[in-house]
Image (cartoon, rainbow, N blue to C red; front, side, top):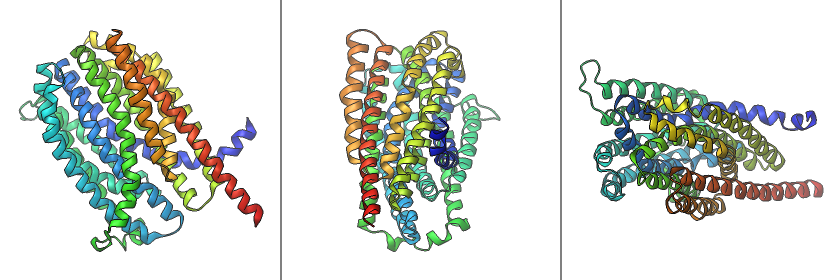
Length: 459
């Protein structure tokens, strides 16, 4: 064991140092939805909480499309930095900012019009749909500043500067909570707004984060040498294509996974508003641990990109395996937390006993799939850093839409197992994704390492 630990020790330290701030900032994305759910659950009631669940199940698809596209810049920045090509980093930022701004506006239009029409035809409770519509509109607007923020965040993180986005995310979430309580409850002379209040607080929070992160990147001395080539004239078709070549499959990976969970939420909404509210509580808690694991995955993508760009394939493999170890340990801890706290954790969101009882059952299932969830997202991150995104995208489609959701529908709806049956299907999807991605990583990394050893032997 000591020999094993010494083999990976340098990579554990590097990965953890890089990952910790990314974990905090990644959790920040989900913490916004978590704060909204807690505020609504305690101050507005079960029906508004079900409305938040319905909106999040729709909005999150748009959000992960945007975030996936914005992640296209990170491995390219990491690889360029690994080659000491600083000028290319500035050019990539110019193109990414344009792409993400257009993506944010397009997604807002789609959510505001197409999804606003669809939401009334999903066999959901009418009182839930009525409260969901205005909240969905405000969340759609917030996508534009969110993606602008993420452009600067991914640029900085690709260069190894992860702490600043963490600070901005934490401050933004504190602002969101304070404003959300004020707007929903109606404090300091403000008229009580109900569910719309958390929509306004989220919008203000994300606008503030975009402005602050942009100012940091443009004013910090850390990026002066990179930003010399940040200019409109450096926006060109080839660089946009290179970003989208990675960003689009990454977006699809997130869409295939998250849309399966959104589809599960809609299936559960046909059972009852109480089941839907319970699903929102449990999936929100699971989403926090997932986003923490995705922070580890983001760090893994950065290190993999650095080593891949520098053609250090042995280091790439050791670094990647170390990140698998880290996420397994972390998700084992969260599994224990969900197991022993399954009746206590739902109280964070609601005091409705019927909702808590169902959510407690779901958290036991969530505890079971923690390892699969963590290893599959780290696998995606490692492969993304190496520029391998197309085959993993096919894997996610198979895992969630051919395996996971159909099994969930069969067990939950056809076999009348209810919300737990739907969740068993999600477990199967995560397990399938995790195994396929690990096999893919093993195949590529060993192939690259073998090539490097052959070249060294020939020299």
